[in-house]
Image (tube, rainbow, N blue to C red; front, side, top):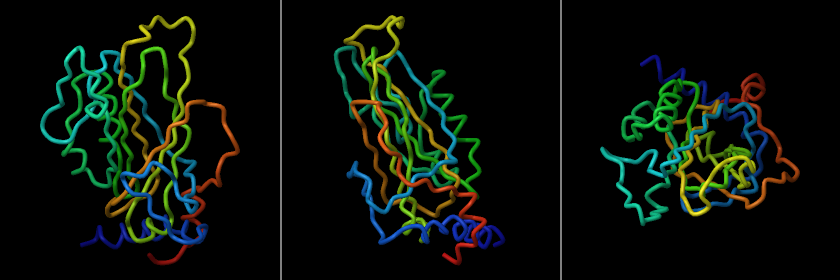
Length: 218
């Protein structure tokens, strides 16, 4: 099958990042802290969507959870999925709203032979906004075809001229396209800062530069 060697070659090129890393570190799905061996990806693509009705943007399975007007249901609004094949998208149900459609369309345009995607959705208070800060991967895991992304976010108040109800809940979603292919994902993570003041950025991993460096076989 011709696709397998090509995919392995892409993984091998992407895992040139392994040369940039020290010891392997694994970020489990329940762990929101990045390992010391993660390297930030700089050449990602991002789609962000906000639903001011506060409903779930995406869910696993055939239907979205319903939310009563007096139920915050944080866990029902929250989603975190790593997508490495088009089939992974088919296993999700997106809200039939502008926000849900934006995320679905963006993900559907991903070429999974050379890329992957990290999808996150979460609730946010109406007068606050969540900003994406960075995304990183674990090089040694990716070298084995296992993608462990970690995304970092921060919260800030929306501009003063935005009309909002401080007690209302909205939902935001982030679809991050990563310039690396993978066979699977057995872990992911995310972090949230209460302030959007940036510190010193971590070491940047550029997938194009790694691919050109001839990183060796996976």
